[in-house]
Length: 547
Ligand code: AMP
Image 1 (cartoon, helix red, strand yellow):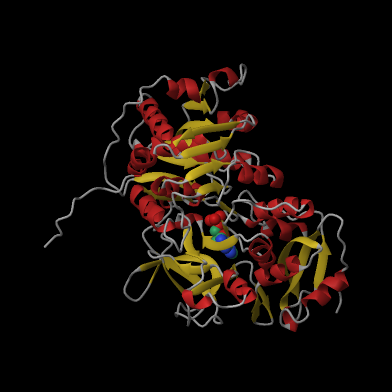
Image 2 (cartoon, helix red, strand yellow; image 1 turned 30 degrees about the vertical axis):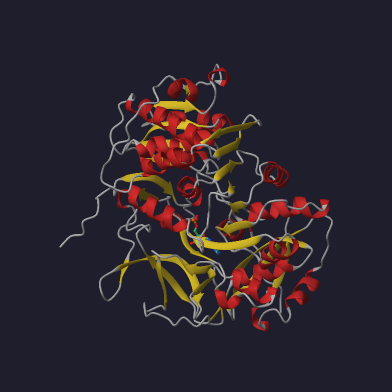
């Protein structure tokens, strides 16, 4: 017997319809590429998303055709999120920090039909447009009078001309909720990038889950600042969860330096911010010397790479901002775990609480996870055993776009498919996950594993160190030994010997790095994460000091 409930497909358009009807006056504030601040409401987003949908219908696009963006976080990008997916097309957000050849490769692989870009990326588009054979229309996300005259891009139109001429009367279509809605290519540190293809159903389920109190906990009282880019895994789903909750959204545009982010937080009374550790590092570096405080910021989600304990401590203890450490990946829409305390932790001293917050947190309902040994045998949740992390759930990929890379899933005894994350982790008895490494970054020393994240965390806890990256270097006896490359804070000083001494008592003796390398900068990839492949390349001629 079937239940007798209404059968309504889960559609992304329903989010924007809901936002317009129930909190249409909620504010959307954007710092524009031009530098000024733009303000309007959820009702305006809904109206203009319908105009986008009409404009797309006028381009003879088929169902599931791809519409690409090369854009910062801003209101026009948000309109495309809803107009493109809502009308049955697939929004392909491209990371503008990728190499131009990679961008052309991705646009061709996705068979993008229309590409919308912020004017900051005009030189990039000029460099790649001739190589993007499938793109039949280029749209500059600007007012008509800002459209460059001699761009060299055939048929270039301004977004405002293109969609502004359209009616805002549009009935969102209803279709199979498993239809594709958006796509994002993985960082592709090895081989060509592969795309995760999200569906309406996966996006809505993720939006519901993300809004839960022990997940992102976004509410109608929040003013949310997604510093995490809309070109990287849909800004962790915030554009959808904020519509569902009715939060105010504040988009930082291209200005991601500490000063600009701080000023926006204060001016717009931001209560909630989300981003990768490198962005928060810039913010804290700006605030500390000037003695600045937050007036309204209460919580910040930090993820994408391990959040150093020094940062958790500073946000919590110095600024009274709760850190929500999150883990996920492009293939997971992206949220997998998020770290909030349990009731029994509330009476613990602050430092003990910080030690829990350092972990990546507990699985979100919908995501199941396990750690396995080399033979695929599940390992205990004791906080000590570490193994390869596998996940499954309705917002996790089952295969990549166009079947690239074959079937990634690993079946269990019941034949259920688990996605291998490529991360190595422990899980404790309370279900808190702790990522110890990417499997390819683990340092294997004398048959034991050393967590590069732990070595980095200790280095950045030293007051003179701004950034650290640890890699394994060949050793004739131990196979590999850790060395840590560090960037000093401006004006601060520390010697190699002092830093090595700093490790004593903080980790097992045999895990202390063999060497410290002072560098000007550590290579950062397109999504703000340390590029260890590049660092290894830079240090390929490096030899360990004689013992
Ligand atoms: P991406 O798909 O580019 O977002 O990268 C996903 C990968 O980033 C994960 O598989 C992890 O290796 C890493 N990652 C994401 N969040 C965290 C975190 N909080 N701590 C440590 N690593 C993380």
